Length: 330
Image (cartoon, rainbow, N blue to C red; front, side, top):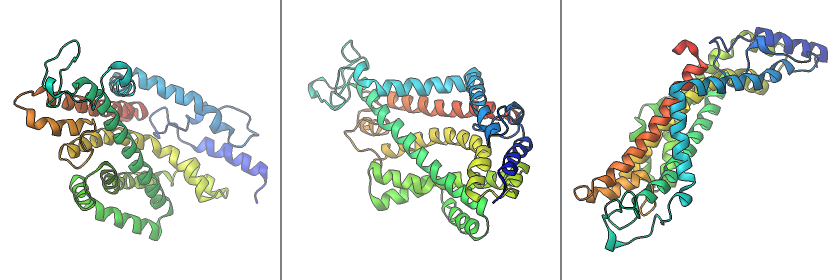
């Protein structure tokens, strides 16, 4: 067991070795620039913890000041708020049918008209945002978590563990993601749960490969080597010194791929493999509107517009995050 004074001094040495982030070095949301840390040096880890809050506020200010990121964030927040407060924005039930009033034109009672079963189109769009956005966010976060853990373990442990995980990744990457999802859903059957299983199976490998590469680079940096020489265990090295250096690029990747995932989920629901009618979901609404395309084309236009705006919001936010967290990418 090393003396406490040596461990305290080791923390200060590690802080001094850490490369500056704000100047465009490491891309990190959790670790502040090494020159901006203050605090009582007699307290282990103080040099890192005290500077975290100002650095995060600085990242948030730069993010909101970036026009691309601000537009993307505004689109996502607007669509999410409209979906969340749908019961307050419309008095209609998204499943209520009125076949005597089908394909009604826009009016004060139905602002976007009604569909082929007399259901209010605006109401179904708002409630459909709940299913679409929640599904994309939940599945996007799930594949991120699995890929982050697998990539970190592979990159940090190395050896047989790395080789085994990367061979699994190589096998799954040999198939196009969309084709792999179709095969899995075809085997399990249509439905939201089975679609989620297929997306997780196909999606985590992309994150795992990216994270592994970032971890391989980060684990050789001087402050990580210094922490290792002080006797810190693998868990502390990975979570305290390696992950903060890789989380920034991973978040940027997550925002972009969540937008892509949203469009893919809508496409799969359009093919009848995802959310099933009569549930309001943008892809399922596109599927239901095919038979009425010649009579009422707006039934296909509005769900497509909403899906495009949501995906655009995530992509713009990802581009803005990349510029904010890594100025060298401008």
